[in-house]
Image 1 (cartoon, helix red, strand yellow):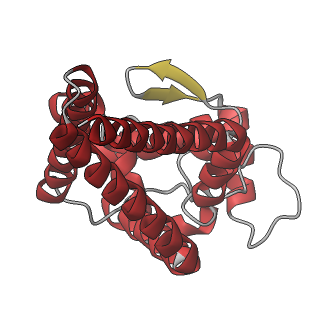
Image 2: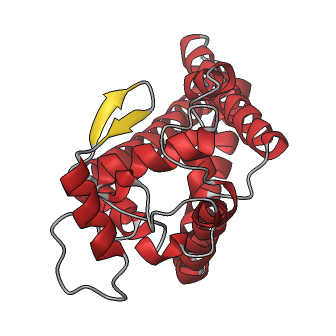
Length: 241
């Protein structure tokens, strides 16, 4: 619920989401945010039922808690299975959306009036990547048609984040980077980021995999533990009655 509320009130919070899904419009994003808030409210209500059912020794409330937790666990397993089955298809769709969003909506470095441009610049500089699949994604883009450089300077290793959405680079480093970006397939580069941001993003997620897996397993174990304890409490109260 807190994450959903934060996204709803922070206008710049969804910049990276725009990159990941280039066709995400304001209505779709708003719907996703309010779904998060609604799910958070449901989980709050669920915890409230479990606590009250236990404190008041109320079999009815515990039964509702058991049913809702069972449904949530079943939905989580279903979502996990769907994600595994359609993983490759989802990955290709995400990559295509990122590439299309870059080609159609990226306007250039230091364009603080464009959230999409700022998001791409931030991603490329922080993840040390260029384009969605690689630096050639800029060929034929809206930005490419009005700019003499083959790639923005945020695709270069010498770029400096000046803050507030602005970036700078020395003339020598920029010249070297742009020269490398004009090559069809350079084997090595001194200044150009060769890796695409899609792969860089997944590499970053892989680096955090231990934390992600630990949190996921911990939450799942907590849910199952709560379900077992609720069933035990319900059976005990039923026997006493």
